[in-house]
Length: 126
Image (cartoon, rainbow, N blue to C red; front, side, top):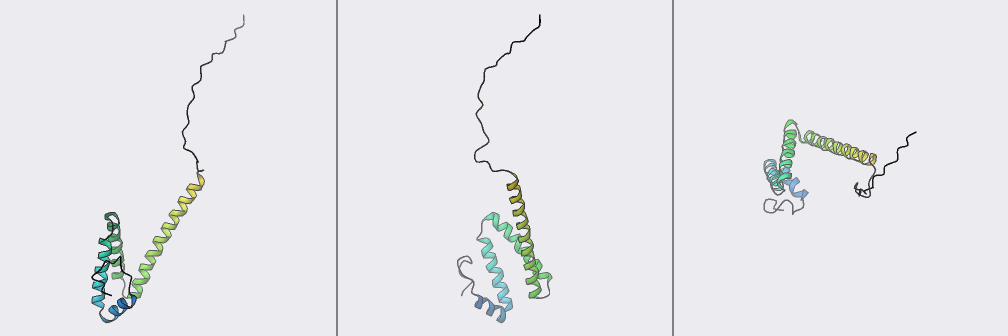
């Protein structure tokens, strides 16, 4: 696999290639990993690109804070699960809020009908 020549979105991850590269040339692996991630981020929409750059920065910082690859993997995995849990809680809140408000099949508009004013005769005692 020549990972440097084609779009990272159009190719499948060749695990054996990346594994061998990491084993034989850790610096080359790291350089190609960084380039591939940058290509993927650059190929996304502007709004997504900004978010992905921030997320990648968090991942890189988390990796830098750990002494070994396994510790970095565990820390990044923890980040992923924490994000998943927050999303799951938000979905549950939205579901509860939706269940509390009955769904309306029709819009909340109505036609106001005009009525003639009726005056009642005032009874007076003579």
